[in-house]
Length: 133
Image 1 (tube, one colour):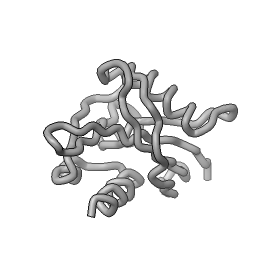
Image 2 (cartoon, helix red, strand yellow; image 1 turned 135 degrees about the vertical axis):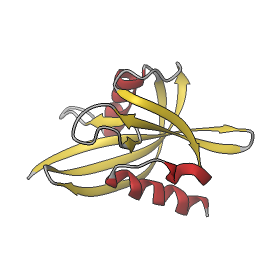
Image 3 (cartoon, one colour; image 1 turned 30 degrees about the vertical axis):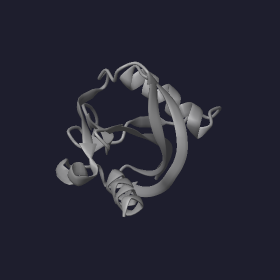
Image 4 (cartoon, one colour; image 1 turned 180 degrees about the horizontal axis):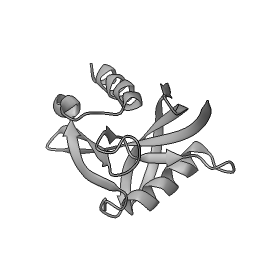
């Protein structure tokens, strides 16, 4: 089974004393239409943080400050095994522009579960919820 090292940005912002998390809907591939935290594949010469900054620049046209590590999720899909490394991020330049995704929205903790997440991202949502308790 093919193994992929991928990174995801838990992009967050505080508005009106409420934390919001940026979620994107896949516009391509086997999981088109499902939701994820944006990111992508780690290239052999990159650190996780470098890969995440590059992927968010390529997919959303934003510059981010990659902050604290949140978790790694190991997930088996029919076609591959994915190691998903997740980091909190803050946008430092630009406004998210959908270059690869179908849709996006800022979700609060209360409505994080209102979209159909990819299996690996469900574990990330659970981790975020646990931290908020």
